[in-house]
Image (tube, rainbow, N blue to C red; front, side):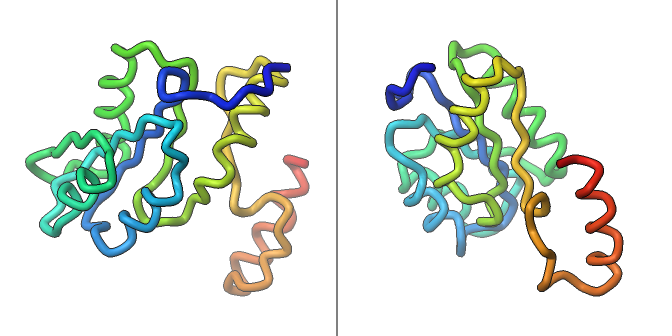
Length: 145
C-alpha cells in the first residue's frame, strides 16, 4: 500500500455550497493544503464565493441556485477534464469532517474500489437522532455492516 501523503496533483476536493458563508471558512481551513479544493457556489446570495476564494479554493459560481445534485454534477464535469487520481466530495455545511479524507483515500487504495462513501450513521448509536429515525436507522445499518 502506498502510504505517501497525497498532493494537489493527486487529490481534488469538491464542495458544493449554497449560502454557506458562515461555516465555509472554518471547513476550508480544516482541509489540508496538500489537496486542491474546488467550491461550486450554487447561486448563493451571501458571501460564499468570496469566502471560498479567500481560503484558496477555486470557485465555480453558478448564476442561479440549481440544487445540490445538479451543482455536484457541474463540479464532476469540471473535474472529469482534469487529471486527479482521487476526488473527494463534501458538502459546504460542515457536516463532513475533512480529517476523514486521508482515511477515505487509504480505503480506496487498499480495496481498489472506484468509490468510497462515508457515513454519519454506520457505527453510530444514533442517540441524538429523533425517535422515529432511531427506530428506522438501527435495522437499516445492520444490513450494511
